[in-house]
Image (cartoon, rainbow, N blue to C red; front, top):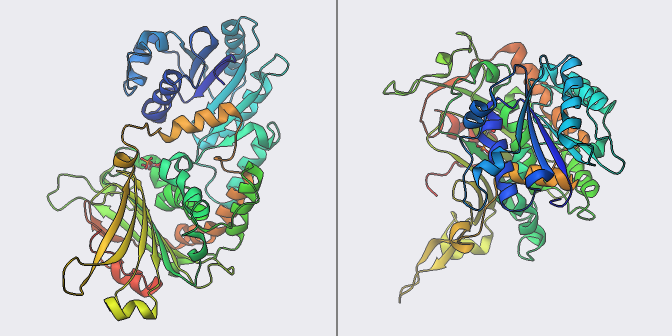
Amino acid sequence: TSSRRLTVVIFGATGDLAKKKLYPALYQLMLLGQLPRGDKIRIVGFGRRAVELQGFIKKQCANVKKDARLPFEDFASRLFFHGGGAYDKAPGFESLAVLLDELEQGLPTDRLFFLSVPPTVFGACAQHVSACCRAQAPKRWTRLIIEKPFGKDSDSFAELDASTSGSWSEDELFRIDHYLGKEVVLNLSTLRFANQLFEPTWNSKCIESVEITFKEDIGTQGRGGYFDGFGIIRDIMQNHLLQVLVLCAMEPPASDLPEDIQKAKVEVLKAMSIPSLDDAFLAQYTEDNFMSEPGYLEDPGVPDDSVTPTFAAIVLKINNERWKGVPFVVKAGKGLDERLAEVRVRYKSQPYNKLLVGPQAKNELVCRIQPDEALYLKTHTKKPGLEQEVEPTCMDMRYASTFGGSYLADAYERMFLNAAKGDSSLFVSSGELREAWRVFTPLLHAIDKTRPKPILYAFGERNPRGFRDWSLAHSGVKQRQSF
Ligand code: BG6
């Protein structure tokens, strides 16, 4: 990828994602020699209004981690901006095509487009790019990376899908779920399929429950206007957590080719139960007890009577041989006590365990996605000494100490890189999204229609009140007290 000429175009270049993730990721990839440098690369930001380039670069590249090996000025000299007017009108794309031709000076160049635009203009934008801005030279590719939301339910997804599939083939489309680019998520398949220890016990015979948790210690932070139309289930669960669940639950794919991986993922989604309102716990955060953090309803843009959940937990079941009867408890919340994403696989205790450690004997494998990436296994160990005492212990593999000094790439770096390589194995296929929406649409429609009142929790709580009892009653899973 670093020897070919490449133009990257970011739609939504003045936005938050571009600032937080996209420009830093592109810098990093150039620094590491994974993308071309110098006059072989151009990065064009597209926004509705023209901007003053230096001011734009200063603002949108504020999060770039500068490194002497790539002077920032060298990176900045590859950045351009195009104020193209409305995203859903052709002229801005026609003028973009002229600019791209000019910048590329007629030399054969691949073109990678990144859509980070509101869902309302998503389809039109994809169509205009295809009609006006494809790479011209033979043997040069054109690819489109697209960022969620991929619709709000099955019907809106089908509409969105149709609006891209007319002008883009499946192998040109790269639908991002950035959780698939996180190091510990990438390791789930390795953990399962490269270690003889886990796969033979990875089933309902040995596993009691699987919990997949996402917690954030921040609220919507001014994104409330957007968030309110989606809610935590669409924002985090139907995409990120479901993808993690699928990687934990899928059958071994026939090969590591993207089509085989996607096939295995679709199959497990097809076997998934369809949750109803009765399977869901919904809550919303209020101001904290000391009133220093505003409640969800205080976020400008959120209607005063909003019942949109900022916390949700759902129990999912997978109706196949491997997972019969095993609850998958998926929970996601904003405005909680900590930032945490993890998978917790709880093993069943066996009769002979009890001889030594009593009925509480459970092994647990925890894959901590963030922060402080780690894998740890809760085991039982004889306490050193003359007495026969058994203690809960932990086999702990932290990425920071085990791979000390090795570089953990940000998820968006991997996304850009894999799209530039044409490797779609970490992207989400249209078939997966169809199934993911099939699983969640009935519940989401029931919430939109009946507007159930969420349980209120104060910003910064560990869990909303009542959640632990709910979890025990609905899944048999006792929420942890500590580690
Ligand atoms: C995004 C959600 O997809 O993921 C945000 O829209 C959320 O609401 C973010 O904050 C979390 O991503 P990460 O990588 O910080 O865990």
